[in-house]
Length: 149
Image (cartoon, rainbow, N blue to C red; front, top):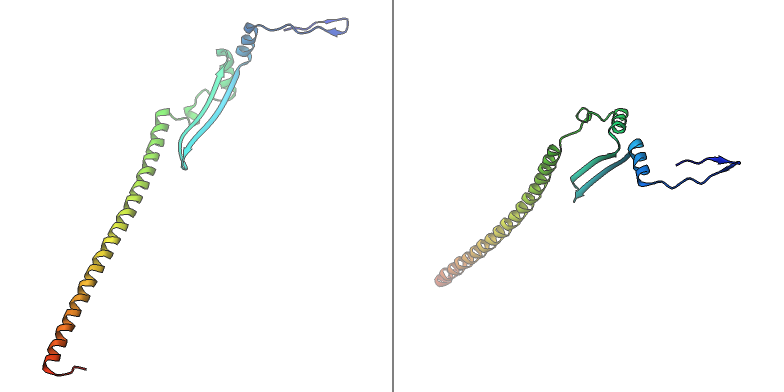
């Protein structure tokens, strides 16, 4: 890719071949820096922080040294298994908490309904028993001719 000057005018640049493009990419390098986070219902499921470098080894080593990325563990990098394990544990804890809470609320509602049913039944039986006692007392009092007011 060169242009020469002839008579004060610049010549058009010649088209580049794929080999020329690859040579420039490997010499200069190409960096794709990506950060992706995935969450569901407010729960962080997955985080990916990736840096993809397409370059020659020499170019990459110069880049890594300049950006201080040769030793990722020193800068807080974690093994992928540890990241997945912590994310999985957090997700399981959140799901278990929600399921337990929902089940406990359902159980409390069921117990409240059963207690209400039992209290209603007992109140009905007590009312019936009191009515029977009052009726029996009225028959006894009414049979003797005495008035109990």
